[in-house]
Length: 162
Length: 473
Image (tube, chains in turn yellow, red):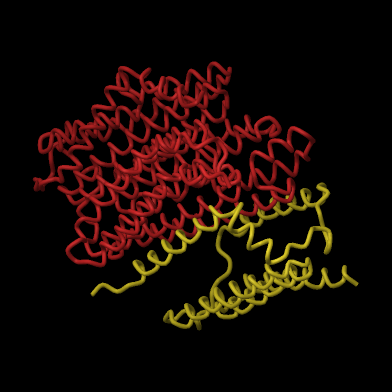
């Protein structure tokens, strides 16, 4: 049963991801991407990583996809254009991707990975909070500086000169 | 957490403090013009606090940072670079004055990120600092909003950069899957204890390498370099050509040379191939450039190839030669970009043909640019010659004769395009009389200092080498 659930979620991720790059309407792409990200959240829930799953839904589906939709709707003449999804580099890209896929497939096949639900220790919210302010305090605080810089950067690029 | 950890990041904390002050100064109309001076003060205070941070012990923030010879040397070089770039920016006339406080804020944030990056000993920290340098760099590349080329540079840098850091992150996730930790010190212990599948390690490390190679503009990840350098404001291009590059090499050194080299059997041939490809591509494409910024961009690609030779060799003398080269290369390149800023302020162009007859109009700057270019070409008695000499010596010592021959052949090719610029400035007749504009005293000062350093280190290189040895051993 557990296996079937996993394969169903995995299939959803792959199909939605494909649709989001193949769709010719940029708005549809955003919707398919939202579904892809939701399915990835499903993988996290399946692996008992509830916190990660909730964050995935909140940040990606709730925040970033909303931003995408606003950007598409507010950018003139982008919403109703049919976009071309291929260019003259298709063949080269296909070869590189195929080689990479083969290599990754081999890696995943040869290494004895930790897999399946319950195989890794379940981490509680309390543990995550503790480690964020002990072992991971430097990256945690440093990211706040990056966020500030990113916000200032967005304002500098976006603001209209008076 | 080790209580000395905070002492170690004192230089970074000072810079962050000054970054906030600079940002605040931008709000007040009267303080706006002080942003450059304030950020320079921040860098100087930060540099003064560096020696304190060296006494903070070896392993800090639960292994996130490490206080070793490499981080000591590179943090000094990076602060020097930041100081010079701030001085160059103060003399750059195209910077929009209404956004100047934000510009210096970004410069300080990118400096903090670079300082933390070279001390990182955990793949998580390495990834976060890499991403932070990238995000700020995208904004800085596109800072001249009214200039189409600058916006193009920003968007190009963003697209390539996002892809390559994404690939690195995927590689990091595979490494985490293989070892169950991102701490490089623990990974070394696990590698020593048991064997790991070579195939899995190879693929994950290649993916991790992609983002590092992008920052260093090593072939085949170099395509963005000329377009971004051409479009970005010149002081920002100067920063990109030295700062993030030094960080990229530090990452490669820490992750590949120090940690994985014993188990990663493909490293030496792969790195040698990349080094030769990078220097050859850079030099060949530089031959037909007519814009000085594009020419310098291709020249930095070639220089990255020379620097990478030391890492491909991977011996202690190779690592020392690499760090020496990074230091000299930073001075030479900043000197060249600084001279370009001064000349471009007058002729309002970066086309090489507009530099014609510069010697007659502005002899001092023409001589400084000539010295920087000859040093980049590796002509004695300038510092660039000694840097190339040590790289060659380390390759020969490790019996990598192919690499040594490639460096020599490439240096000959490179001399041609450097000499072409010099010929234009000294021998060609000036087209239209350029109006000389008064230059900022800071830029003049920094150009003269780099010229003196260039000569001084070329004649007495052992002074720098002794300093390096003291830190590394």
